Image 1 (cartoon, rainbow, N blue to C red):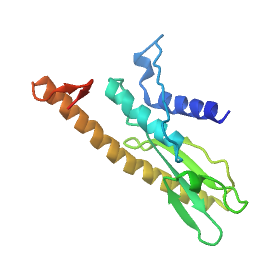
Image 2 (spheres, rainbow, N blue to C red):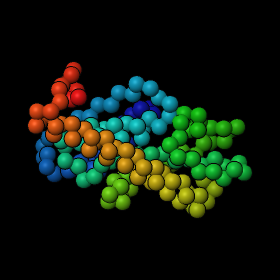
Image 3 (cartoon, rainbow, N blue to C red):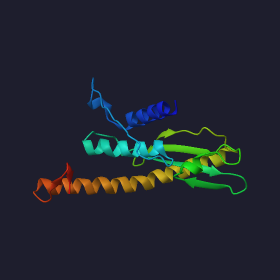
Image 4 (cartoon, rainbow, N blue to C red):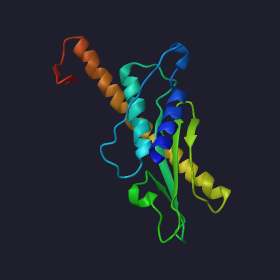
Length: 170
């Protein structure tokens, strides 16, 4: 059940970034295989699928970036970013606060935000959401650098510089 929900969230997030009007009566199929899960499965899937779409040449509005944030209550009042499995699970009988968030950072558009736990007040909710969005912006810088590096390698290959090893440009 949880994997089906994650699949629907991933689909909705990707639909918000792909320029679907350029593909009428078409189907774009994205398959994600999770090799290891130390938490942040949805965010990692969104980031991987977003980069895969860009690499495949599918026109998008912006690079879709995802990051999670959480809240460690209990007197510490700490906001956490990019939660792992332990931070996502409940502590001492209390539900952990985990807010995965996906956004189009260059547009400043929030595409996905989901929190299944109660937060003490709206100020805390705003702080956790802002931390997740800051995390998305940091992820964007990393993804953009990787995409630019890949593009420069491919352009170099077009000019005759570089080789292909096992379907990967080197």
